[in-house]
Length: 588
Figure 1 (cartoon, rainbow, N blue to C red):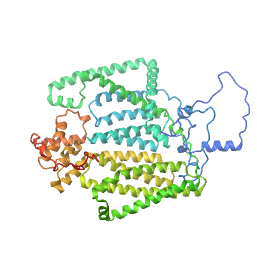
Figure 2 (figure 1 turned 180 degrees about the horizontal axis):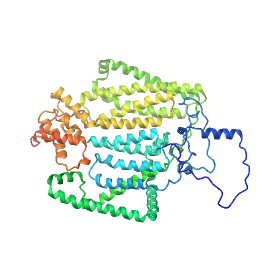
Figure 3 (figure 1 turned 90 degrees about the vertical axis):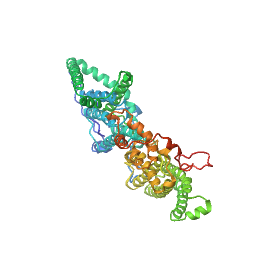
Figure 4 (figure 1 turned 60 degrees about the vertical axis):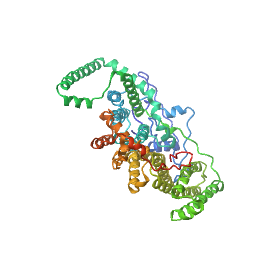
């Protein structure tokens, strides 16, 4: 969608009423400064205008002396006039009357939601998302909004995230992908660019549910009053087509069993008992598509919400605590470099900890240190001195050094996790926190880049990095990686065993790796997955590619035995990460 205000949504200029011919009066000449300001405002590029609204009154904050993490100084943002309240700055004018193309797209979304979303998640999410995206596109075009690069980025990213449930079976990567897709779709419709705009805009679609329904009802009423004949013809045509399909489809299915199987596989299996659930899904799709279309036509300008910067501190008062923190980081990193370069024997002699225990002891502390460092950077930027170029240089030098040192801490934490995984194997929690730590390192790199090139794109760049991380996390198949790593450890040192009680609860993504295990470990690891994959009656549109591949593998080589051999399998009474004299199993 466009960041430019649309012609259709601008308030019309006032003109004299018909029959009233006022006497022409000479217009007063504006002062030179005012004329210059108006000329500059007219010539401003599209990127400087309001990012989401249909009015030019709400602009994104300019990069000025209020933010030391910028290059140059700019003019401070002018205050709003007395009559310009928060609601007036955020809420755009009402969108134009809903178009027929929008209505048909919304109806298609609702029908597809009722038919396909009741049996699970798979490619059906993409099937439902396409008409919803078309409804938003038609609504934005009718309101005069144009497609912008960032809008295309959010939209394409959101649709790409919906490919995760179509390809992978793991429930937790699917959940992250669906939530992230919703957030990116909301950002595509709002076009936010500031910190608060990106944060609130990712959830802003909820704000448009009620206005979208009201907008749709009003549009249907207005169009039905003037075109009752056309609506009647459309309903009659649809009814005749449905009757013909049902009658002849039933006859052909009765005449040929292969055609009946094909038709049964393609058509959703909706029983009468599922009526309330299907009605709910229809209403959910209808409300969601209307909210998306309404937002595309009249997005809320969340960038209008601004937070005033904190009171700037003196150079010594601001820099001294951060310099001390940098020195502490440097001392810790120096010790880490000694350890990483072969000083573990000294650490073991002094602490009695082996590699894995040493890694487990410090990873969580380093993860929290990374998170707290980002909080310190945010607060330091809020109260940083803003006197001129020297202050900006000081801020960049101190915070840039802190970012670089924190990146070394991130590398140390990931190295500790690698040692621990090599000793005890990979789990969902371990791979999740390692991915989180890796993304925090990417955020630090983006902050460093913002210190050099300017922070204009930093909020959106961090949002893109988060979405890209979730997409990569889902496509790489965490359950598949967990199974692969544990199988490799078992093959390398078979006497260590494999934690059957853990791997048997993985999703169908793990089947290709677990299929390489010898018997009886293979059958014990795949017994639960086989029961879910082969005996589950999941339609094609709710079946992922990983489930289809697992089904093919298990049909060729089904599990053996009745499961009694699984009780004697174990790792000599010790599970990975568990010591007999501990209080309990450590899930980390």
